[in-house]
Image 1 (cartoon, one colour):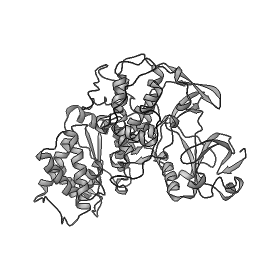
Image 2 (cartoon, one colour):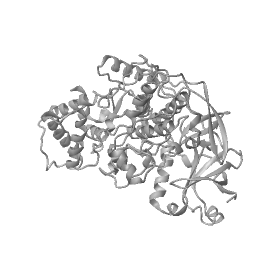
Image 3 (cartoon, helix red, strand yellow):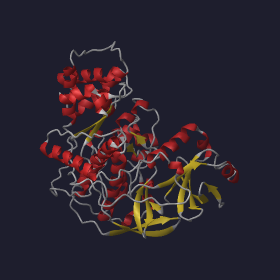
Length: 548
């Protein structure tokens, strides 16, 4: 079909592909003639509220992201009645659409026979950089595969772009989730075990890293690790089958197979926990150094297309940082976590985030969805970064108070700091909010419940989840069991405020504080902790805990 019709400020030209959520059209800005891709829901899904809500969640998810290796979106809106009439109902009036960058080809279309180690390393590093940015803002992709890794012409050179966050899951929405979700979403060839079994609360950055392991296997060995069998067979293999050995078709450095093996570990806690962890280990592998530029060849519409990509330094995870001890970053056995990445000397990026493309009449559909960038405050940001660096080097707690009148951006500064520290793998973040009127969503109990994925669960479910969490540290002994029971009572006040079924009662606040303290000590064994205590002047119990 070759027709011209309008969606907002764009003229649709022709469809260029279809996906699980709809059709992608090639389009141009009606005034500036800038090419874009328009993703729009089609068919019966465009008439079902569930799929429309999922599509809108994709818009909200990507609008929060601003990274050179993540697809840029320009606008969103809804299909007009006229567009429905012109397409004889193929486009459904009222269904959402998304305008974004137009890709030249995907990773799936490249000629893998021409890949070599520097090219593979460059592709993986930029995917990890994009994932680190996404994860730090609370979004896991959940559908990482070759089709969703795009290459786009950018200033006469190409750039890799991660796309299609249609299955993205916000990690701050756990109260709305069940312990197990009957709906399993994703692409079976690239699906982590916790995703294949619908365990939504067990999913996190490590879920995307498993998918990256599958994608890496496909890129260097020619196929995903468990082949291309039927869906149920693939899901069972991800959950219980031995991991097949990696047999690269290209020369790779020593340690690369072990790196992929860790990505593909069946147990989530045996994988890299952060994209920055995986990037640091990848950067530390010996091998041929990265080429200043690479040329990828893809086959699209029956024709070969070449694209030159300048091998830019990743802008987020490794900027201003280097591996302190080359060749000594121990990947460890799968029962042990590898060492943490070095902390960058500065929070600053070597390359600034990309500027948005200004197009007339475009962007109003994203109003209120984009994060407002933090500008200035460099002295304050330096002070926060230095405090974190000191805490990590001295292994002693540090405290920083952000104070001032309401409305000057204290919370925004703390949010920025948490995101930046998260994406370089420096800390695990626990955040508590407070207000003049206390409630179940405030204070220490909710902070720990959110971190442990217990929010919204009943008492028995909380205890089961805590026991599962503590098993990662070894067999559950009597002290661990008592800790799980005590934590259950502190967290379950949301679901049992009268404590009618309590098994442990606390006589003094110090008894509660001891339980929290032990948990912090346990959490801090894996990675330094950053506690963000928002409006803490309203939280008398939190202040008492800090003093304790």
